[in-house]
View 1 (tube, one colour):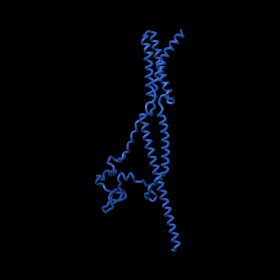
View 2 (tube, one colour):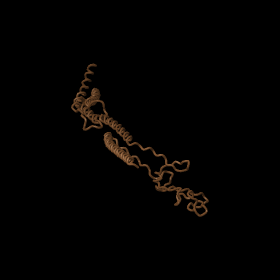
View 3 (cartoon, helix red, strand yellow):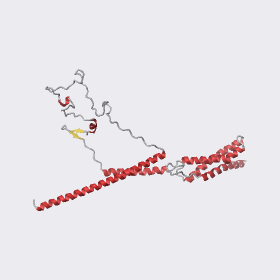
View 4 (cartoon, helix red, strand yellow):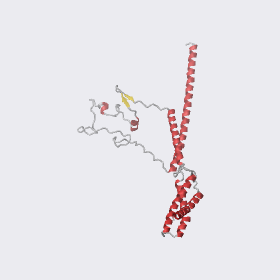
Length: 295
């Protein structure tokens, strides 16, 4: 071989070596990127799990129970022995002696009749006995026309980059649904689209209107002599307005508070006190004006 051929071969080997180094560097960079993506997704999933736990505690939902583990023992119909114990062979038909003394027909020289006569015996390799764990892990085989066992075709290996992309999309979808859940959790059950001030005015006004109906009932009872004037005046001036005010306060605290909110939402106590102590006397005055007008 001439010097030029040696030089060309050296250049070819050097180029192959550089190509191999470049390929190894690219593969290493790809693996680093995959590991970084996995770590990032792990952090996102951990944060999502913590946030979901907070949402569950806020709405009073406990964590779901863990799924029961799959049984590791032998399945039904394979006996009740301990794991790893092979199934017993069927007993010989009656008339051939006890199962312990039953043997397969020999070949004439005192030896059993091969693998079919004594499966699993030492020195006979046609029916090898496997432990239960290895038997479950054994690959299924497909019998070829020639009679040899051919391993079944394995599933194609998944692309890590594609799997990470699918996981990232699912994490994005989970973030979107989580944000929607948080927005819903920040709204109270009572009049969720109203502002806190408008909600408080509506609640106190509704409680005052209910107290005004009670005032009319007391006035009618006073007209027939069931309630005296002092009791009627006490309920109109103090009793029913106070009941309406505390009723609105409790309603706002129970149904006007969002499931997830920092601190206590405002209940506008001075405004509620003013509304309740004005609506009830105004209802009584309106009743008096109506009665005089009808007369």
